Length: 124
Image (cartoon, rainbow, N blue to C red; front, top):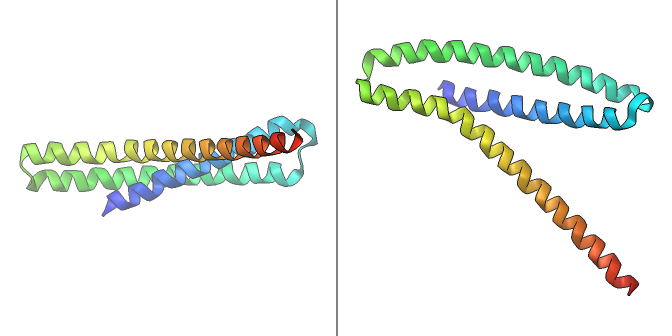
C-alpha cells in the first residue's frame, strides 16, 4: 500500500535533488553569466523539492497510522520484521539509485575514454 508510495516519494526526492545539484553546479561554473532560464529552473526545482519533502512527511504520517493498525494484528516478531522492512526500504532505494548513478557515470567515462583512444590512434 503505502510502501509503493514511499518508493515513489523517495525516488522523486532523489531525482529532484540530483537535478538541483546539476543545475547548481552549472550555475556555479557559469557564475554571473548564467542564463536567466537556468536560475528560474533552480527556483522551480527548489520549490518542487520542498513540495516533495511535504509529501514525504504526509506519507510518513500515514505510515505511522498503518503501523499502529498493523501492530494490533501482528505478533511481536512479525511486527518487528514489518517495521524493519519499512525502515530499510527507503535506505535501499536510495542506495540503488546511488549505484545506478555511479554505473551511469562509469559508462559515460568509459565512452569518453574509448572516444579519446579512438582519436589518438587515428593520429598515429
